[in-house]
Structures are given as C-alpha cells and as structure tokens.
Image (cartoon, rainbow, N blue to C red):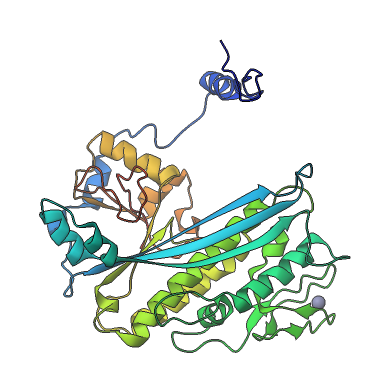
Length: 390
Ligand SMILES: [Zn+2]
C-alpha cells in the first residue's frame, strides 16, 4: 500500500530502488578477493602490536585537541534548469580543552556552559557557481573556476583569534617555511597547447612566460583540470574543500608555533577529518605539507607538532574492524602499519609505492579503550574511532 503524498497522489518506489539488491545478488555470484575478509593466520601481526604500557609518555602531556572538519554541498539553484549548480564549502575548527572535558566527565551533572566555553568554533566558508553558471559571458567553465577560486582565496580570511590571514596568504605560507611565506608558487600553465611548467607566480599573479596568459597563484592547485562543462562538478569542489582544510591546519599550527611554541603547540593534538592526504589534481600539496610540517617540527622543542588524521572509511578501516571483531587487536593496543601490513591491506606487491603521491602521514591502527566515543563537536556519527594517520 503506497503512502499518500501532500498533493494527493501516491508515493512511488524510486526507479532504481531495486538496484542495490540486484548488484548485491550479482556480487554474491562473482568470485573475487577481499583482503580484509580473510584474516587468516595473524601471528605475524603480533610483533607489530604495541600495548598501551609500551607507548612512551610524552614529556608534555596533551592538554587540548584542535579538530578541523570540512564539508561541501552542491545544489541546483534554478527552477527548470537543473544544470545550474551552486556550491558551498566550509571548514570549521573546534578547540577542546581536555582538562575542562575531563572535569566535566567526572561530575555528575555536566554544565553545558562550561563545555561551550571549552569549545570555540572558527570558520571559513566559500560559495561559488560550480556548473552551468559563469563569472562573466564568453568564458568556459574552467576559466570561470580559475577566476572564482583566485578571487575567493584573496578575500576569504580564516576567522580565528589573532589569525588574520587570507587563504592566499596561507597558500603562499605552505609553499614557504613556518613564518616565511614563499615569494611565488609554481604554476603549470592551463592554456590549451601551452604546457609551460613551473611558471613562478607571486601572490598578485603574473603572465605565463610561454604564452602570456594571466596566471593566478591559485592555478597551482590545478582544480580547473577536474572541472567539466557537463555534470555538477562536485568532485573539484571536494578537492577545493580539502585544500581549505589543509590551509586551516597550516594557519592554526603556525599561529601556535609563532605565539606559544614551547607551551600550547607542544600540548595540543591537531585532528584532521580523514587521512593526512591530498587526492587528485592538488596532490602536489602533499609534498609541500610534508616539508612544511617537518620544518615546523625541526624548529619546535620536543616532538610537537602532533598531527593526526582520522580515517572513517576505506580498506584500512574495514581491516581494522576485522582485527577488532576477531580480538587480534585488544582495546588500548596499537598496530604499527609497516610495509608488510600495508602490502596485505592494499593487496600490493609494492607497498613502498602505496600512497606515495597522496599521503603525507604514516598509518597506524589504534583500538580505543572506550567503545563509543562521542566527539564533543556536535557530531554524533558512530565513532568507535579507528585512527589512521599521524
Ligand atoms: Zn602559457
């Protein structure tokens, strides 16, 4: 019996409603290999597992966590013209004072004001036409994207206490070293047929040395290469969001590095949503991030900065769940993901090459002591959190 809708008609089943069941039935009949499905003999993992007692206590215990999380969405915005798509992306950061959280946890009644004071949100958001709409007449969608991203980066500031820097400032900083932004960034000329590489482009832009096209510093991200005239361009918007998340991380770590290197920076854990990685067209930033944070570590006392990404889906997470289900990894234990483990999970004979162009952190699997951890950031997704990264 179908439900009745507001307009008086009947609600129909989605035309593709049966597709999931059909694909599952097909997969059931097919024969393929899923590494996470067959754990097999796990004794070889034993010497790679460290108990909690083994993990060296840092000299300066962590007092705070700074979590950075982004999101993006695309919507058709013209009635009768579904090809006109507008996009919105944001990155939020929340600072959590662990002392306050612990005190509150110990008390019988949690004081919401104390919690709110322990968590301050900061935000940078961008919105732009992503498909079927252009900055001006007579240009293609890739040029429109280039102009919009350049303009947004120059004007959007990351709104955090004392961090008064635009996304462009942070992009130049990421190409330099902590405290010293690079004077220019390398741009691969986007003009069809030009192909000039590594044109040095300063913050204010410069003409291509090969063809004279006006280049923006944000062209270094190569986002326009993922943009197409057809479709909703959600993927390049997602890439843009991950770049913004990385730049927020650069901004916040550098702020603490400049103002409180020995104290706040050394006692704060920076958490990023997703692995420490850069996918797709802006992947060159992966190497920049690695170099930048290594330079920061070299000029900071102790082991700081502490950077960690949290992976919530993918082969690594499936494997981690299997290890927990079979109690190969007990609560409080950490699995060091060396080449052998990576080879097993990624099903590759060449683990050294795995993620070389993508990841700027190292993977590990940690089984939390708490079964359900509800992050204090207004986000109640299931979080038997499997951390991978750092
Ligand atoms: Zn050119």
